[in-house]
Length: 280
Image (spheres, rainbow, N blue to C red):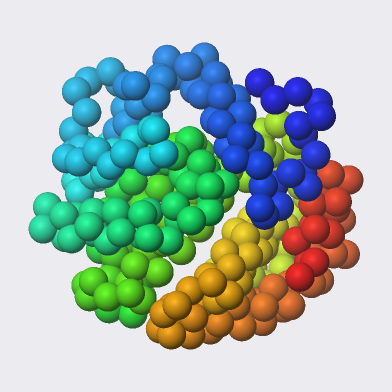
């Protein structure tokens, strides 16, 4: 369990220490074991949703990540299928999942592995990755749920080009960071849960509570950091152009939510955290 000196929200800012995700995983896994009797060795999204110890269904591939492993799934048991349908997620079949696995492997090795703290976050916090179908060739789908601690859902483009690899890398990091911030908030509340304050989110394109906007800010500020590093170090013109375009898009979105600085929903820790997110 992280001690008091570990609970400064500034520790979440990039490049955060590679040891932080492991400490948060330990806290989350302890709660999971206490309330669900699940450990990493026997965890699956189906088991979590069904509160069952039945055989894992739908898991068809294991990808090693930084000494750990991530289970990839192209299908699922009845609870996962029901959950996915309720959240508008269409789980991929074997052919699509196999294609996605290749892109995920390349994204891990060619993009994420260059940043040990991001690789550590994914290794420690993503235990199950479910492959879902996108809504179109240029539309990526990624999803995670604060109520499901170690699972994410991502899609993969049909074309296996460099832009597709970069898009998959962003989706993986995007949802991993949501998991990380949720685990941190379990230890240090950043938002008053009783507050009803909301504002327009450019990411969801609808009104969102302060917590949702804060999550979006965190995720995209870390991604902006990653794209900046890539834009400065890559030898690929395509990768540099992709990174610069994402930086410009993220900067515009971040600027559009500065009104959150006046939100009464933020705790003192939340205000300190927010101040770091707006620093470029």
